[in-house]
Length: 365
Image (cartoon, rainbow, N blue to C red):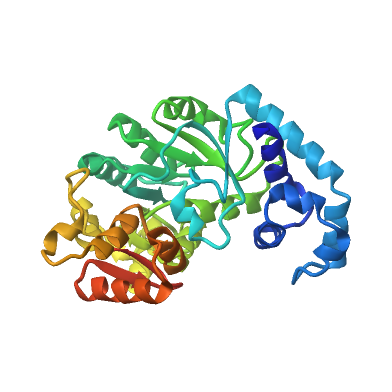
């Protein structure tokens, strides 16, 4: 039954030109992934934004389900997991990204929902200085025990993965292709080591041809998975700057390592800082200051700062301890009326315990 359910979840992504937004819309209107494939043409026609071509693809969707069956078989044979966007164990940070993937395929031992997650990105032509900074930063991050995200590419990416492994930090490589291969091939041995404390992930099915545009697309996941994105080195143009822009769009914190104005791979970082799109970082202390992180793992909840916290306030704070959340979800989980929930959230914001983000999202200070 689980395999059958997964077939329909994957099948949604196999519908030609479906797109993430339309796929999520279909699941919402139809009441589930399987229901999409069993819906009538008349009912599908009532869903806003679906054209005749898309409806025809859904009605005649046997090829999509066959592709999904092949993917399920590949997963079983290669110890690959699939996280559907409505699943409880789907990365909670990606749930807040409207364009977050429908399915995230993973391999390894990965905890996407740990307390602190950092993306380390930079040029493929990393300098000795850039690699050195990355290695030193990994050492400094050990007391925080974060999950380290990068793209397994040449340069800063692979330096971050290697340094994370050397410091026993969990690290995950986000791939721009299916999990049937590792690109670039020379990084295959590093990827195998990452399986023991992290792994690899992708929203692409196996066997897909690799196109350049896919590397830009996967940057959405790199940015969306993390609390913090750090650009170590970047030229005036490049994928790292795209990822930084995406992270800003997701209301995540971005840091950039400054460099000399004439250094080719400092230009991008300096411009991010100059445009107030990234905070300057020299060491882990800059992250600790801006993110209000302390080195103690499992630190007590911030409610301990307030002697007058009520039971209802504590309920909301416990929910937000798991990560940023939309006010609608907070209200449902707390089993409180929306008016009561918003009043309590405003009170907590005045106390400095939480802060509001765009999109009616709240998080702990």
